[in-house]
Amino acid sequence: MQSRVESLPPRLVPDSFDYRLARAKLRAASGSASEQVTYFRNQLADRTVLRPREDVFGLAIALRRARDFAEAERELAAIRAGESAHPAFESLAAQLQADQGRTEAAIANLPGRAQDPPQVPRTRPRPRAGPARRGPPCRGHRDAR
Image (tube, rainbow, N blue to C red; front, side):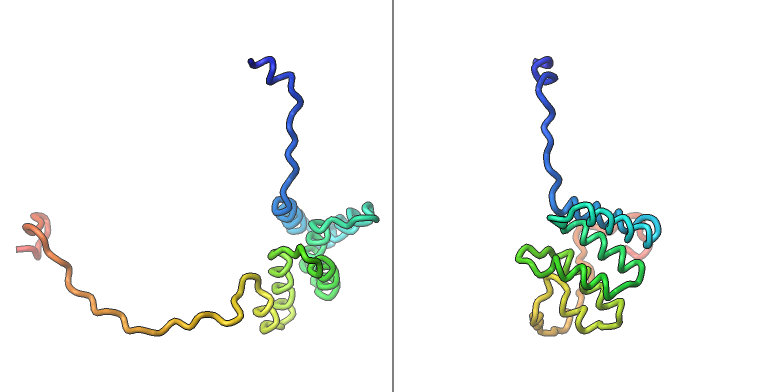
């Protein structure tokens, strides 16, 4: 049985998109910001036909670290425009706007945010009753009699 398993070629499972985004985010966060901007620009220059969204996302994060907010927003706008936009793109857009001091726009861009949050009626808390005593008092407690 073991020899049959060893003779089979290994199964390679493609990385999920979330994994590739996390890897790009970690890559953009490590090292100096200028080195990471150069790295992601080179990665994107090598692929002239198709620009992987995770590399564009990593470049936008590296540009944010380099404090080049306008360029980061331009790069991010290209991948946010598609129908397969990811919540991480919206979150990064909100972070970029918050970094620039546009907090109202940043709050409006947060992913998963309800437009009108539900109004919960304020109620007064119920008064707490004393602890219910059941059975004989504890032997080790001084106040119990």
